[in-house]
View 1: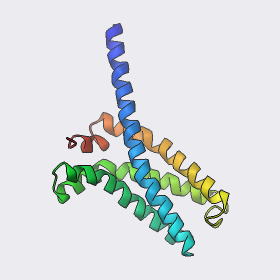
View 2: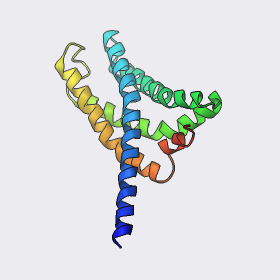
View 3: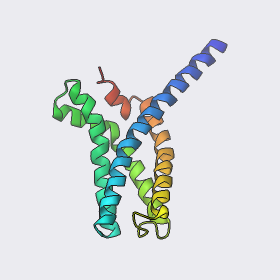
Amino acid sequence: MEHAHARRHAAGASLNRTALAATLHCLTGCAIGEVLGLVIGTAAGLSNAATIALAVGLAFAFGYSFTLTPLLRGGLSFRAALGVALAADTLSIAVMEIVDNAAVVAVPGAMDAGLAAGLFWATLALALALAFVAAFPLNRWLIGRGRGHAVAHAFHR
């Protein structure tokens, strides 16, 4: 009985580690795209909606590129690698972007604070942390069912 419990605990810990790694991987791509989009949009004086659209687009682009690169290096064709990246990351990136941008928009004045304001950067940091917290259980659930980032890991060599 104790051995079965220990195996389940080890499997759960391994699943948690894999989900943590996948969520951090996703957060890295999303954060680069999100920060870049918000900085460009804010510096260019774009509307809040246009800035958020740019940030979301770049977050998806960077998130997918972080998955595509090792797949392409591993020998997959671009088309096959893109299919794997879309299957692996779309839900996680979508959850991160919804939570992240909702948090940024919810803080009064954060979008209009400007790049030199602590409010802008503190809100962005909080928003990314909340996005991580929201995406982790999703990634854990997907990986536990052989989906999400587990799809990409099947192709790593």
